[in-house]
Structures are given as C-alpha cells and as structure tokens.
Length: 116
Image 1 (tube, one colour):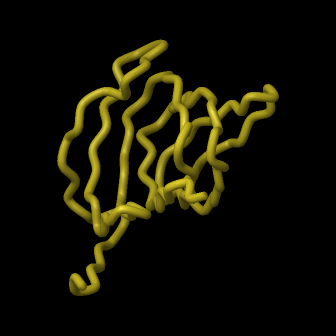
Image 2: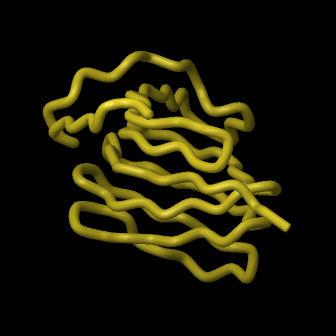
C-alpha cells in the first residue's frame, strides 16, 4: 500500500501532457499530477488551456471538482454544464461530449473503471 499523498489543487506543480487527442478548435494543452493510480481508479489534478475538444469515457466514469477557469461541457443530449470554480460534475461510464474551455481550467478528478 502506498502512503497517502496530498497536494493543493491550485498550487500543485503539474507535468505537461500535450493536447487532448481530438481537438476541434484552438490549441488546448493539458498537464496533470497523478496522486494515485491502481487497476480500478486514478486520482489527481488536471489542467487544460483554452480550446475545444471531444472527450469520451467508454470504459470508465469520472467525478471532478473544478478549482479554476471557465468554460462548458456539452453532453450527448445537447445540454451543457458551465464549469468553473466550485462546480462538481460526475460523468457516467460511456459518456461522450465536447469541452469548450474559455479560461484555463484546473480540476481534481477521480476516474473509476467499469467493473462487471
């Protein structure tokens, strides 16, 4: 078992991880700090600069809490969630949608694997 790990979401130093895989517009760049990962879940801090991109969670779900930034996430039914400081959002396994980031967004996240 690994030792507990704690970081300030806003102050943590993140490692650049490049652009999202399906960019629609702009030049969004991501960075992250993984705090825990095992075969069932991953927890950490993630950031993305302004831009627009497709996202999908075919084999996992995600719970996130935004600390900074602004934008919206469009869901498969066309509805949108405004994202910004204090917003918490859960995306179920199989979710697909579009991120539209207008100010660099930073969030804490937990991605969990689908289990049968």
